[in-house]
Amino acid sequence: FPDMDRAISQLDWSPWPARDIHLTGNTADSGYNLKLESSLANGVIVLPENRDNPVVVNMTSLTLPETGDEGAGQFDLNPDDLPPMTFSSKVLNTKHVSLKDVGFSIEPAQNGALINSITFAAQDMIGLGNGSWTEVDTGKTESVFEFNIESIDLEDTFEDLGFAGSIKKGEGYANLSLHWEGAPYDISVAGLAGKGEVEIKKRSIKELDPGA
Image (cartoon, rainbow, N blue to C red; front, side, top):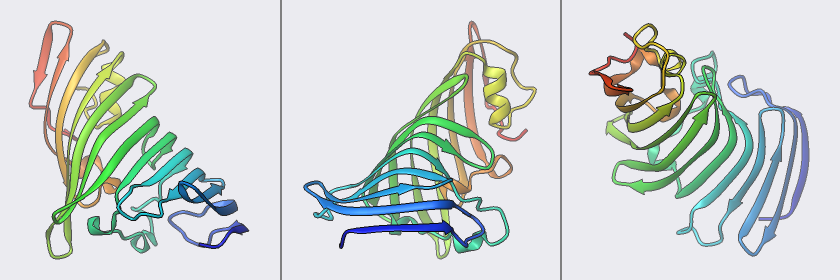
């Protein structure tokens, strides 16, 4: 790739209308370094010379496209499109939630991709997980994930996850097995299925129904 230095005032794409974009690129020993600065994403992407090595995405902040809005159909990925990747972001924003210290790795697999070593945190919780995104039928994909969550305030945590009113304040742990139709970034409480087990001090609540 050639060296580059480009500025764009605004991206004309409704799901992700980034502004004040500055994009620079140069070749280094590790590969091609692409630095992005904008209103919705800031960080560095390293494209390796050897395609067997993972793409490295290291963001300080990232706001994901709003896939449920008008025009979001343009944001269309297939799990087979994903290269090997390691991802980290100090702040990751979606339409519904803001997370920090997010990390994961992507490994291509049969009919899709494995998404492993997931880490994330929020004001009252930290979480770990693993999962997959696979094509289950022509034009249809499914996301399947397991999460272990530790929280100092389970009430606030589970309200964010769609379990409003199920749990009172207190420290605890949760193990969640969830799946939904579509991509990992298309997650919504209404489309979730699965089960969970929650431990609050000496009590436990099992078989929680997401969105109930």
